[in-house]
Image (cartoon, rainbow, N blue to C red; front, side, top):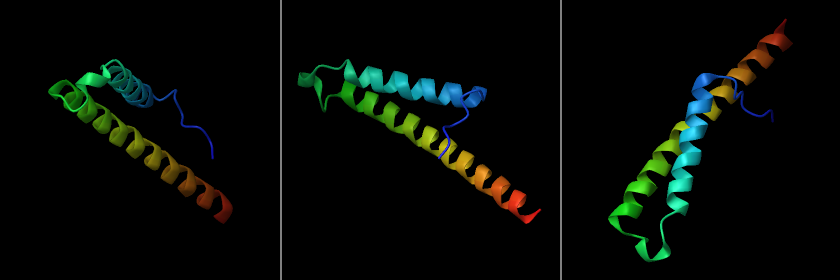
Length: 73
């Protein structure tokens, strides 16, 4: 599997948001787990992950399509 194309501006912003969301979760002290602060951070991370995962799936689908077209020619 090839790595995602991080030269795409959209890929950079999606990956950066995911990294920032994870960092925000890591900064929350253990005693605040399940607090409102944790819930907000978890929701942000979940949303960022879903967007990043969707991007990767689209990239994989595009690559499969081009490979199939190349084989057909």
